[in-house]
Length: 323
Ligand code: AVJ
Image (cartoon, rainbow, N blue to C red; front, side):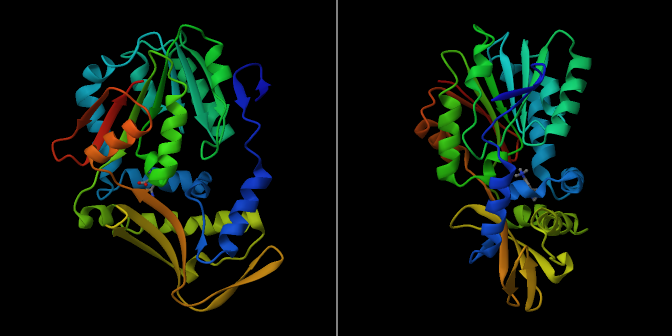
């Protein structure tokens, strides 16, 4: 960990941009071609994701918000007071700010891959909650990240790891298990995990959420090719790829792909990659769980008591898990 701005913004040394670029290149040259969903989120991708969250078809964001709005106090009763709130993938931090009072938070730790956005989030949080000590950690938690030294600065204040928005769905169940275990290892005696998870439901509802009528999700998907062009000095034409999203029931996940509409070659740095018509690039898996399956996963990761809240259609689940 290195400290760049007083002690407000800490950069996790493991997050090496050269490795990220090497991963992206390797994925695109592989067969099948793939791109990690973390590359969706440049400035334009973040704006498009914001637009997705406002779509009628995209139920997860609003369903999760509904659960928090109606159950905030009962949920907060299961969280330690005077704790350190660790906001995993904090984005603009708005979801977390609604918890700082009800959970009596002493310290806010925003964790995100995007340093610029993180700085803005910390300033906004500090302005609204001058009594809360705010700091940021720039980290990519698709890799092991180093939060323990930061938590140790504030002894006696239990951590609450907040992982909303069903971001856990981007990991395979095996990867999710590893991440849940590593969070579990930081809980101590009184720490908790508060996590939002999208639940299994009829395929048509899920598919509409990832293939909306206005084509916003299609634009979000194609935008990743513009990110690849910039990072790899490539010349993808996003409009030569079609957006495909379908529910894979056997794996319990939505798959998003970009399908080459015609056979053509793309320059990727100093190599050419041919894409045959119909060949796809996998851009995202978004796993859906039943409450039972997610509780099992938490148990396998070493959590003890677990509580779950859902909306009345049981479309989305919010879980609090302790050691
Ligand atoms: C940010 C991973 C929760 O899987 O629903 C939205 C991203 N992709 N529409 C999801 C996403 C397409 C989203 N997560």
